[in-house]
Image (tube, rainbow, N blue to C red; front, side, top):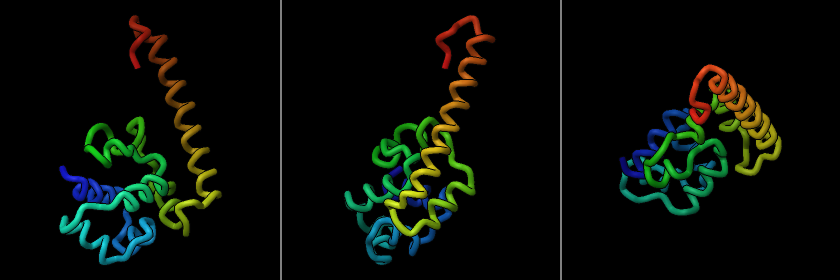
Length: 127
């Protein structure tokens, strides 16, 4: 899968259209259209702005296709995606606070589940 195809997949997962993606990436709709049609590769600016806008996105996956789409395989809930998509800026501080809170909540859940697995499993190194 090419980086262009991964961006297309990401737009489907995140439910963003070309206009929204152009705003997120701070480029023209024509530039996004060319990326989505695989006529051009995304610029570093486009990639950086996508990663900034969606902090749960696994940048390694976006660049290489390796790993899960989102870090730790945690897909954000639909309401979290909507909040990010609705924010006007890549640097929306209020949105960053919400996402950080969400990440912390998910990390606590993971730690709790790992502890539970440790009590059940004879091999304590399973994660």
